[in-house]
Amino acid sequence: MKKDDAVQRAGSAANLARILGISIGTVKKWGDEVPDKHEQELRILRPEWFGRRPLRPAATHYERLLLMRALATVMRRLAL
Image (tube, rainbow, N blue to C red):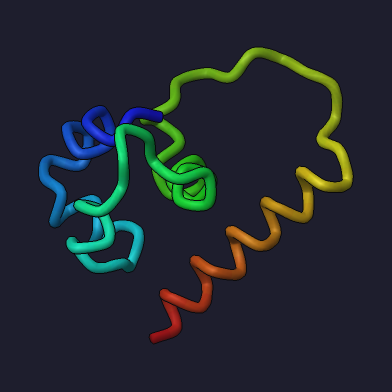
């Protein structure tokens, strides 16, 4: 996902940082693309930003691990 698209959907870079539980400085340091780690978190936190995903085979073991890692990160941030 393009950083500009994510910022626009969030309303501002500050809102995007707040959604992800990171500093605005971190968001500003990104290049043109949202880093994969944060894109995975956004897919969980804001699935409506990504529209419907095409049907595909069941997730691989690695994809399930990435999803579990992203969920664990979100849960840790919510617990603070």
